[in-house]
Image 1: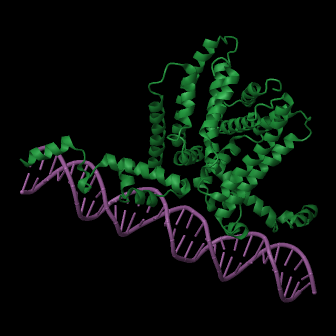
Image 2 (image 1 turned 45 degrees about the horizontal axis):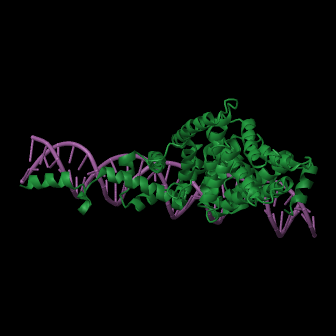
Image 3 (image 1 turned 180 degrees about the vertical axis):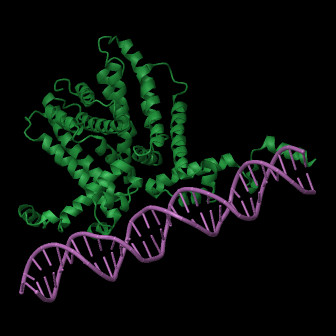
Length: 219
Length: 219
DNA sequence: ATGGTTAATGGACGAGCGTCCATTTAGGGG
DNA sequence: CCCCTAAATGGACGCTCGTCCATTAACCAT
């Protein structure tokens, strides 16, 4: 992270990159990208050191140099993948009107958008999920994604429930949060197994229909 | 005389196993069970021939003898796992009254029951899902599970929509089917990542709440 | 220029993988 | 009772895995 300045200098100064000098931060990223690509293309069980370094066009020793080993690289890749999800989510959420119901739908729409939900991301996501139960380090990043999304949704649903005056139904916001999350989760799986038939608009409409049942005045 | 005794042993008791004789069918099943156990315990990437045969307490050559190789064994294990899901689902569905709405809820309840959704099955299921995108043979069995469930649900929801007289809403049964499926799918994932906090009753209640919104007269 | 520091290389290495087969063992039929 | 078929064994095999290190190359400070 302190090398950020260094990178800026590098990108500023054209004197270097031409001949492919040494750029540790760039190569680190190259390895992570190559790892994610390899998982998406060959599956996690066929993701080997040889395939990764071949795709990154780097030498064999780089993984040990930058990450200390393959396992750590996999964890770093899972973290990077997770962060990319949130960066794009937040990008799509900026500049929205402050209407709670539309905020929820914007989250759903973003989660199902081609930028976040596509063949590559769905394959990677499920690959990580599949090994997460045997790898606590990777599980941590899958959980983080879940947690942040859950927090945000819950907050918005609390506002909506308040607005509709459902003081009596203490479970409403909680049910809406959980229902929305599991629906999005299930849709990612459905996307993976029925990529050709998947329809983002339809998927969004069905989530909205679920929420209409809970909040007739808002959705 | 010795011939007679032999015959009796044969027809009477399949329990020839006293001295651990040879029982190809039993050993085949033993290998499949050991494979599923190993996946649940060590994860799919750490599921090796050595671990499987050790757990099955059989010799190294058995995998090649019965399945022709590790890959085929994995596919056979996926198939067996899938069939076990349906056997148990059908077991829980027998002898139910012919009330459509309760049939749906029975399916949901079964899918979320401890017999079908537990630590072992959730880990195995996600492991297979994770490698399915890189292994068409395994993907086939994941799909089959989905397809049969979808068919059944759709049929029942059509009856319910008919009964409530929603002729105008042609998408109703389809939405209900899809929504229910993705919710169950998402709940399996949620179970895996939050095993301690998962509540089967709550999960079922939320699906019902979704369906109440679509069919106010039936759920 | 020179020396010191760190990035980067790529091959050597042992461990463990999955496959396969020569051999042994068990059981039923002639 | 013996023989033949099929089940079962377990070690040998070649191969690929991930790790690591001696070496080289690039950069920076002096």
